[in-house]
Length: 267
Image (cartoon, rainbow, N blue to C red; front, side):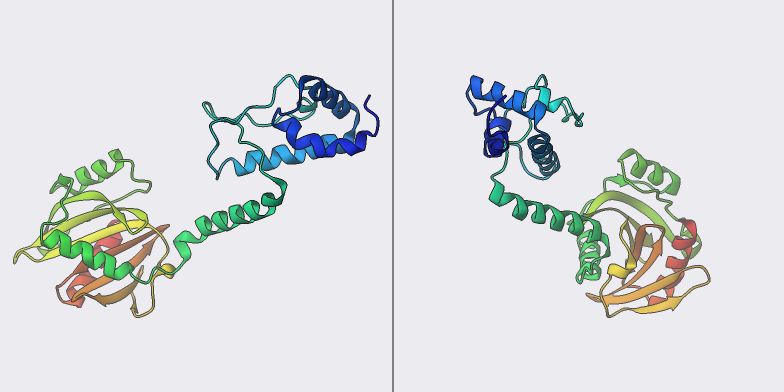
């Protein structure tokens, strides 16, 4: 057993990176078998490595600690995904900073769908303009609402859709696409009226609480609708489960609200 064993903690980073010569490496293994304090230190460093590895790129030259090392057999650690390496141990002075950054990233990802998105109505209005001017194409031209639902499902949309039939309001379904609205995956589909007027519907995972101020609420029998005016268009938003839905058009807001009610009841 090595003398002054508690003074070997400074060698732990080199040990975990396999930078000790064979004799010192073996001596540290023997030391860790007997020194509980140093063993806990090794476990702490390995926990930091595994949690930071999820958010930081793994250096290609990183090396995995030997699975046969007695010090690593006291606690079973989750296996790394196939094809990945254990990241090089980070310098001690950077660990608090990087772990703080990791916390910020995690909190931001959790709150992303609830933070205000000031330009969301304008972005939907811009999608409408692109559809109207032929600058944004549809992936599937389809007049059957159920078939369009099946198309969205086959495209791996992470929520259930139920496209409404608006023929009673004299709007026929044209088709749709899987879309990207700002930083959110959405579905987008279009109706056309008898005078070539368009209705655009988009759905995406979000909360209407993330919408900006400037709209006004309308209380329906089953849903609450939030109405905006952006880029000469009327937009009606409503919540359905974890989805935010919106219907946009340049038609009269009362007519658009009537279409939104039918759309909301269909979902």
